[in-house]
Image (cartoon, rainbow, N blue to C red):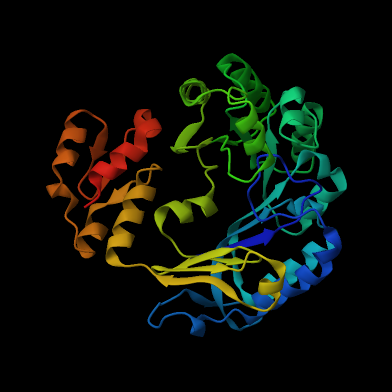
Length: 381
């Protein structure tokens, strides 16, 4: 089934490390929501290549609609939207799509913009998963990267989610703000003790053009080096494993059954469609991207439309498949003309227990996720 991504590009303040399409000027909000609705309403499979065999099913109103089983509302800061905005978006989605009864519906939120009243309303909208942008439980670190919330607010946001009936709660944490693995693990323990079910631990990226890049350029030793960050990551992985969190992707850990169904679509090559500024879609080997500025988005201009070549499909499948525990399909690669079993590096990696395999799939041993880019290159055609 399809997954749907909705991009909300508004923030109260842009973080110093952020290179995403997000804006602090809320004057555009009403016009943007209206344009987002129109994009969803006008979505038509006839604009995509023929013979896609996309999943249609009769909805409650009797109409044949594309069936979806995940919705992910990201940003930006989606929790800035009020009840009216979210209701308009969800009403439009229900008109256009047949939403599976067991769908995973995620909303990203920042701790300082999540309230008890909002969380209650999210539940009424059938949102059943919250992704909370904690990033750190150290107030000095939060201030350093320009976050608006405090560590106390982050923990309170989890309490609010739990009190309002959310059982599927994810927290984002940034590795690379400190060289202390003990501090990071101490913070993770606080989150686990709160009863969260999913943790994403992303490496802090110093993106060109961001305020953080200028700060690091002026003071090169402002942040830990790569080796120190990798050490924090490795100790984090071991700690989470010992506390019942399965590492199912390089940066993602979950209690069993709480893996992100939507994000798995990205890594497994499943179909998804994105709505909103800078949103991407991937349907049957075809990639699409919306414009990344308001003027072009309102005008309906696309930033990208491309059909991936067999070579690109092979590379992407190997790259993504070795990032998560779903692995790489040997049969799929054969259909694209690549017999990966003939790659001499595969035998070497298998012999060294870096790669494991069964009859149809190969998997990267999670202990080697830290050097997955090196291994991926060696397994490409």
